[in-house]
Length: 124
Image 1 (tube, rainbow, N blue to C red):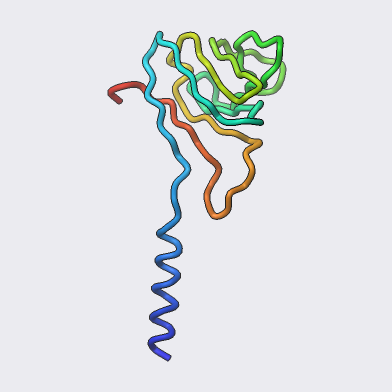
Image 2: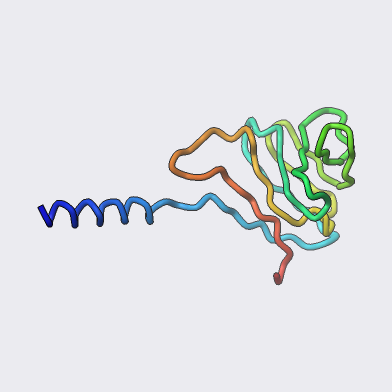
């Protein structure tokens, strides 16, 4: 009985600690171009940056002006462009583009969390 309990505890510990993370880092430089491929079908990107306290969204469309929105009305300036194939391109990275980027439409991959891409400054 003791062996069964010990085996159960060890099995649980190994199964919990063997989960891979879903956080990716992208090193960028202010004023430089940057591009990240979120993958096919990712035509909506959510980000958290110093530009707003609220989450910001960018939708792929033919009439993009590079701005992000928190509620569909306000416009947060950026040089971002999201292609229909899921590639996000910044003509020039600014301080307000540094932060975390997520894909709300990403299919669930249990037991992994949703992917997060961290845009970080070089040398930070």
